[in-house]
Length: 100
Image (cartoon, rainbow, N blue to C red; front, side):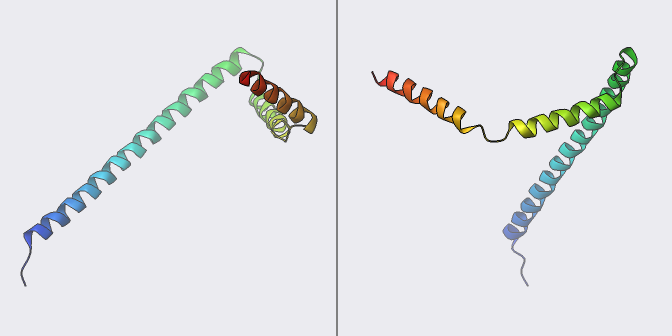
């Protein structure tokens, strides 16, 4: 059995590139994880400072989030047909104005 050195070098390069890419990806994920932990610790510390200096509590933030979610779910619904018709009319008038 003969071993083709070009084939072995090619396999080595493929494995080396894959390993190098995996190392880079792993390092990238690790750095992002460390940054997320650091951000979480910093923001939690700042939240405690804010809560101590104001009368707001975590319950207020949860309530505001719930209210905002409800508002945005209503706001993203389809706009009324009358409003859509008015917008279409204005766009058509602007288009006609540009043609003149």
